[in-house]
Image 1 (spheres, one colour):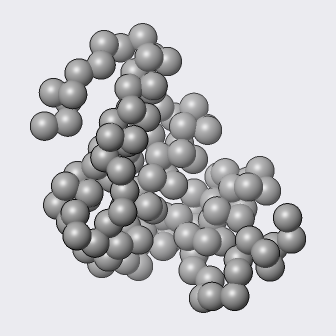
Image 2 (image 1 turned 90 degrees about the horizontal axis):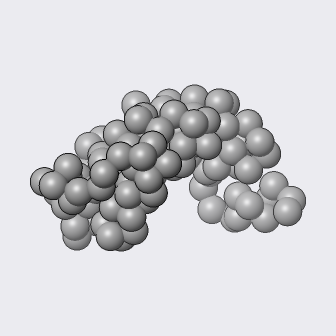
Length: 114
């Protein structure tokens, strides 16, 4: 897919650029752009939840499962704190965390996230 199709006609932010870099096979560079964007955001903007998810996915791809779990947990906490401004699916996030625990042979309990 051509980069202009990926970016669309709207405003491009560092998260969008990070996603393009990730799809180009540059997860380390993508993570840098995600982190830079994270530093720019206030604590209650809708993009924050999806940015946490992107950081979790990049960490997982880099086999940094503990780091990925931390980002997933932040996404879940954000979703619980700001349910009206986020569209994240908490159940989907919890399932993702369960998959990481399976990979690490850890027992899964929803009590981890209360």
